[in-house]
Amino acid sequence: MGAPQSFYETAALFEPYNQHFLQDIGAFQVGLGAVLLFAAFDRQGSALSAALLGAGLGAAAHVISHVIGTGLGGRPEVDIPAFTVVGGLLLAGGVVERRRAAG
Image: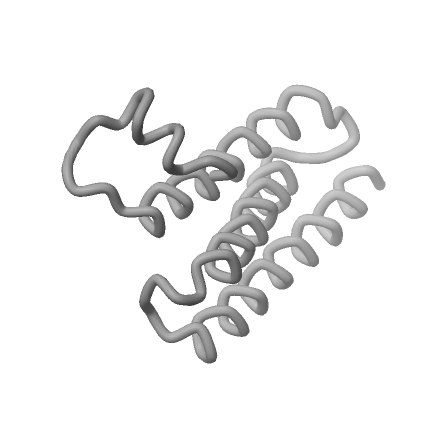
């Protein structure tokens, strides 16, 4: 996500280079990794809280991807606020579920 050109030149040698696509894929990988880390190390939470928090972090990374790539397409004036709301809701749901599961 942080260096899409370098990733493309090193590992993703398929044409055409698409910065926005690679940044978005990186953002979703952040979310998947976060889910796994929450599931493995957060003993007070539940599987649902791990999924919500990890997806929320992935959504936040997706917002960052769109802020960085504002000039790469899409509708930033709609996409960024919408993705921010989705990410916020996922994170809030994850926090609420974690507190519920922790009792």
